[in-house]
Image (cartoon, one colour):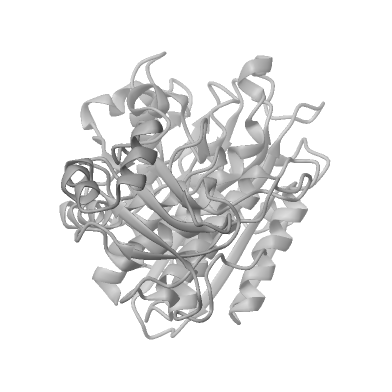
Length: 458
């Protein structure tokens, strides 16, 4: 992984950055030189949100940078500078008092990301001196984990199939001394993971359940579960070309669970951590599972396959059932589960579902504190009957085109036996660049989930 864009020496020479609110601009510029006022006027710079004014020195170098934060932006806006400033070393010498130092460092690190596996970035990322008072250990672990998730999501399936995703998870486990096991291919049937096997059996690379285990067995147990569909054709209910184009990112849930696990282990959170990644490629072949098939799940209920493109909830069902067998104090699952979630909330705002009011409050609080937006949606009990099947215990879809994200969450809830559970339906993708968020693979709800875990177990 590329080194983080932070200077090791906080006192190293660096170009000063002044971050100003738009409402602060008038008094600030009036106290400075006529030359600077004219330069700002020529560029129509008034500290507008996300705008930078690069002030040259007499020798042609950069004398200072003035950056506009608007009047409503949070510290994430700092990431825009890491995306667009020229290569060099910078130091934030003034910022709005509500911009926490650690948050600014995280935003800078997120903005400096570039996916360089196949195409090198046009110019090096700028480096930032650690902001005074910043917890750079915390900033570093969050940035590294976010980069890990982005790298995994951005990598196409020809280089990140089930075997390569297993290798990535194994690498994280080895780095932190965690135990790691993989149940692969027909061994899934022998060990009672029939839904994972059914969804992935048609692919050239065998389906698998990956298990990472770390921490003190006597500590509170936390389980993370991730959907790892490395490519989703839709199966025999084939997606159209437009719907299939970005399906390399359908393993984004597994990327999120693995990234969160890395943060937990790096911070040494006093928990017993179990991570279960259900990893498959949903392909089309003569042995692909079919609409109308009935498959018994690990937990016991039989599932009628109404649509093979609702496969993520199937593999998560077996993984969640396994996670709950250890009686964890908390279960979080992450999945790029439904297009309906995007229709409801758009690409930037992932919904989460839980019946646990205390957990919901923890997550919402952590979301605000970390500027990592999430939105609670309901597990609406009245819709349960719409998943009834005439020949099985339930089917894997709900009522046609309505409430797709809710039905996905309700299906998963059937396989969870603890109320301390939350399901995140993430997009794992940024369609266009925004501050601290280059276009492409994205880690969503990661900082919010970590904040809630720290508050509960730290």
